[in-house]
Image (cartoon, rainbow, N blue to C red; front, side, top):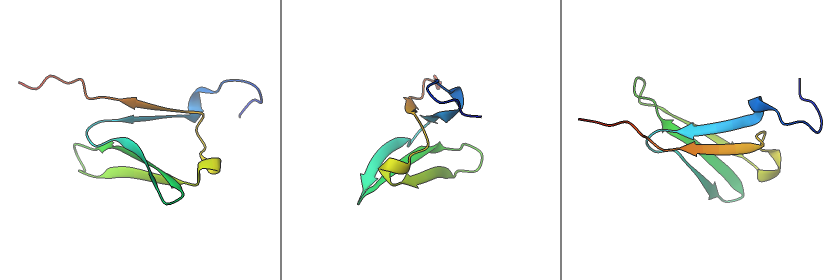
Length: 67
């Protein structure tokens, strides 16, 4: 349930991993999540800016150390 005037933790979108980003194409906002290491697929969401269901978008870099 969403409470009016309250901060809700479940309306935050976290984008992480290689290839994640935010861009604009035409009049749509495009959110790309990182490429999944197992399926090799990338989650992509497209929104008209006034219909974005998230209050915040967090982008996390890849902090793994590869040896």
